[in-house]
Amino acid sequence: MRHLIDILDLSPAEIDQLIATANDIIDHPADYAEKCHGKKLATLFFEPSTRTRLSFETAMYELGGHVIGFSDAANSSTSKGETVGDTIQVVSCYADIIAMRHPKEGAPMVASQVSGVPIINAGDGGHNHPTQTLTDLLTITREKGHIDGLTIGFCGDLKFGRTVHSLITALSRYKDIKIVLISPEELRLPEYVKHEVLEHNNMTYVETQDLDSAMQNLDVLYMTRVQKERFFNEADYLRLKDSYILTVDRMEKAPATMSVLHPLPRVNEIEKALDSDPRACYFRQALCGKYIRMALIMKLLEVK
View 1 (cartoon, rainbow, N blue to C red):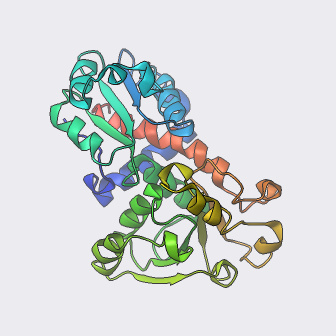
View 2: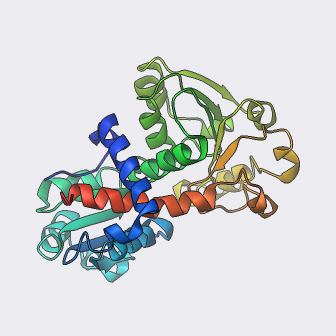
């Protein structure tokens, strides 16, 4: 039995296999319609979610399986004081696999230590979001044709952005990747990520506060929102929330082949007028999330 808590739980070869399976699902959906017949996925979301939860549920339904679970901790026995460990041990009696989101970093790891079925980390605090990373890698592969050798910019909240931390970690295993970190001083990438991932793996990276100049040399721009729920001080959030807004005028300075990704939800960091720009990939990215999660569910359930 395997869990997915961190993107490094998967080898590069396994990630390539998942991407290949997802692409095959896209090309031949009917071949996968009953792959998980009789299997049950539990979605335990102790923190709000739209795309991640619904894409997991849709993925299981499209594999012919069933879904149980909750979308709000207030609707679970957690509100009565039940521990995460006890919740997981109970739910693993009813389900074959569990997708779990929790506001506390490390909660999915704790869950994996007591679960009788595979645990998928669907996001834990500001720490990790491995299935979003798989989504991002599938999207980049489909949009650019490859990952090696790309220059990828991360813009916005790099301090609390678990999607950013996970994707940078995954990219450290590819060749000749250049990273551009674009953020206000207060939301810079944490030092531990720079030291343990970028510097440890001898990755080329630069930090800047200037989106306009940085954007001119990017293959991929990964936008993020400033996350209100991660701030302890609302004044700090209000001061920083509009640090970077991608507008139509700004995009005129970007390469014609640059792809714009965003893990969503967006607030106002990408102008809605950009949605029709062929470089805007974020809704295609959301769709990729369903397919890569179908591939992952099959892998962890050992479905061929």
